Length: 272
Image 1 (cartoon, helix red, strand yellow):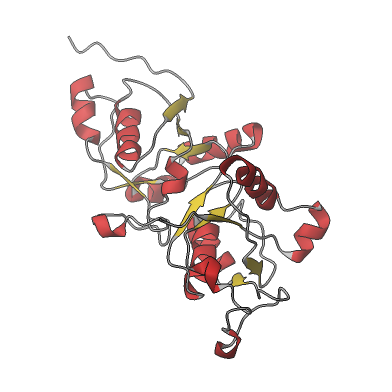
Image 2: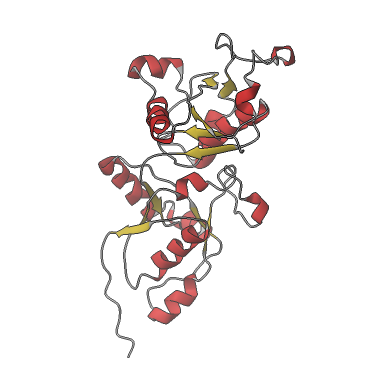
């Protein structure tokens, strides 16, 4: 029979753990353990303190957590840094041979989960999945040209303001695949055609698009994020063409529930 998965909480740094008094990911893993009847194995340790990810860009998040995790020593909890440490008791190979489910509190860009998964895979893990908690806000992205001209994405700023008010993470899951003309003077039918195929999901590791089926592993495509309800955030709603196309991109990637919030309702011009 296929071996049951074990739950692996994402660890906190020692300093943050002292200040907070608990690891929220470990508590969530224990709650899942009771519900799923799966053991919690604290296989990972932080090798260093990392700064908060909240205000960082996706690229800066990747750099912030690079090399921040190592597999825990099975006997006494110290890190395994040399090949001579790879005995059955010093690295828990029995755990690494079965599916492992990383548990974290929220998913933003996937940088932390991707780096934790890499540490497990370097130690010999065969299958690494992930589960996170918390509804995420997904800003509708601008095209690269318009972003350069404007200097900011208004939908991303609105999402960050909502994030502070609702205590929900902002997840930049979408990118524009091409520049699209302004929707202002277009008919409803022309708006749909203008944004057709204009969005794709972001690659969790490097921010690139997933264009091949073999790229859709647990950490190249952040499937754990798609299991949570996602809330698209845009500035205005006119005919809903942009939001509908962005939602389709998320649903194609596996999103189960896609909601939307906008600020301001535009009047559709009379084209008759």
